[in-house]
Length: 293
Ligand code: SAH
Image (cartoon, rainbow, N blue to C red; front, side, top):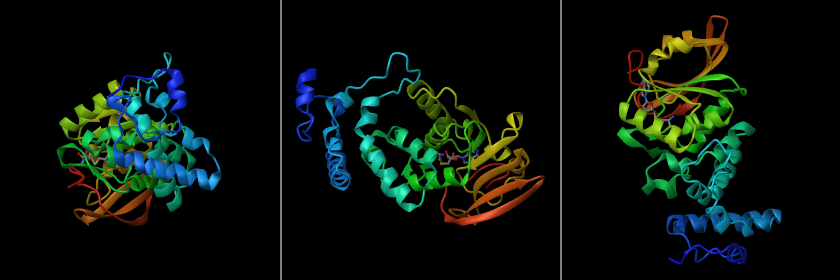
């Protein structure tokens, strides 16, 4: 590997996609580079925004460090930047093209570096149209499912949202980037500890409140919640969650009498009455707990 280039050299190498050998830690996989190059080319043809090619994985981006006064010390923004175009492509081709129109959701998903929430070996596949395994036999949902659930929440900035099933922390970060006040509960100690470390020390999301407990019982102490989002499928809608939903609140939860196959249910709480709406079949891991499986 050759050493870091000077600013003048970096400027001259803007148009080069091949030969990115100047940073050992910044070497994107060939596949990511190829996909990004194809995307950038298509974008440039479609919109005549030629500058997108010029900006494609420039050394300046790879070398980007957080500003001194930026409170969010993104753990490895060099890596995050490598996947910037993968994120844009995901948002455009998997989300916007399939009917996700909520700008707050699209913006949040373009911002959160999804690859940092999965094992390093899976980084190049992090923006693919599918769920991915995380630790302890759990999964991080497909990007479209995350976006659909966030959109169906119909949340407004500043609302208090309870997430059941922190898992990798990806959805919690997306909800935070949407401007929500996030409380997230995980039942598996190992995931809770690992994710807390990632979200806080590494990504700087100190304002997401994380809890280790049985989420089917909600978080009585912090109720009511304007919105509740459950990232695991149970046999019924837990009464505790219905009770902790604020008046005019909305909850999203996969419910099914069989494991591994559920209907995505949206619950509206009008006064003390809960009205349910079905948003189609889906597959989530089990919601395990006193009011789950
Ligand atoms: N939102 C997560 C998805 C994780 S998968 C993400 O973006 O990665 C679902 C998670 O729900 C798993 O981590 C699982 O351990 C957790 N879970 C299942 N039952 C739970 C319960 N009763 N309370 C809290 N978490 C639960």
